[in-house]
Length: 130
Image (cartoon, rainbow, N blue to C red; front, side, top):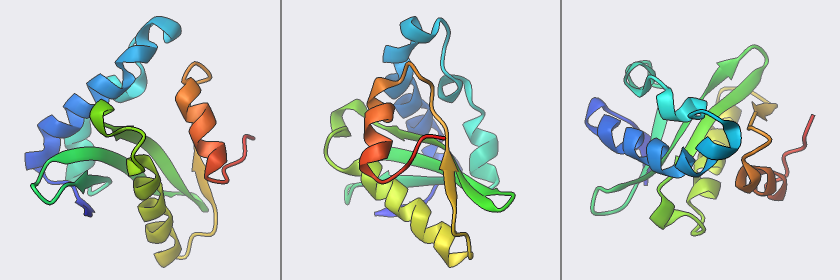
């Protein structure tokens, strides 16, 4: 199930970001932006959606919102143990549905060139590098 994050999800979202992006610290030379993001502020603004198991465990999150004439996906994080099981796809699909429901026809996102998994993932979903 995907739902809007609440303040009760803050620790889980922070933990997922730390774990999911830790492998990129050495390649980038510093912590990637998701590892130092102010998730509390983003949750308070209603920008964070979480993927939750039937047991209530948070397996991933997506931060997205309108930005000009596009729907911007700022960050997606999936817990390492849940990666490779379609969680990222579910989160992107949900962001695309929310964007379409609000009349947006264009999605945008960005990633770091050192994040090889993301560079492979997004094109498989139909995203094109600009």
